[in-house]
Image 1: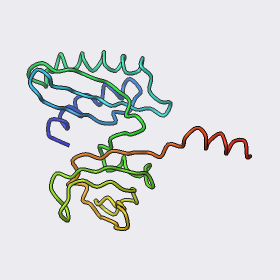
Image 2 (image 1 turned 60 degrees about the vertical axis):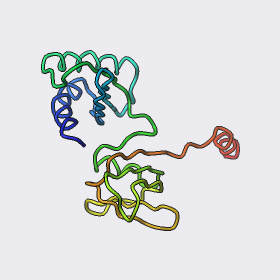
Image 3 (image 1 turned 30 degrees about the horizontal axis):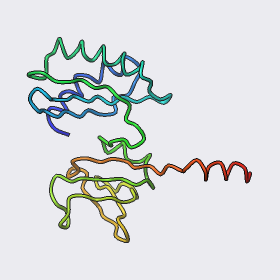
Length: 164
């Protein structure tokens, strides 16, 4: 997480929590007039469009007062979705056994991109099985991590339901 993302997280988290949501993570892409601030929120009961609108209204007010971003930008508030980004080490455990895609800031064993099954965490390392090789990747080196959950197709789910 960049220093700017940490600053924005610290600024916005109290507002999001006060509204009854978890601040899952923040993405900030500074691109002149096309800069984007994405705020991901989550809740046990899920996230609705109305939830995003309510958080957007309050977060926008905080940003207007505090003015932490120079210039113009677009604010987007969203749920993390099923193919969610993992922003903190504590986000990983619920997804052990799922497919993940990791991009590192610098090469590890000659590569920066890893797609495989999330096996676990050992200390500050993420354990990922890619093909038949297990990698221990330092969390501090992770630039971006995304879950790609297995989604069963409707036919196999309905077949299982009728067989019970």
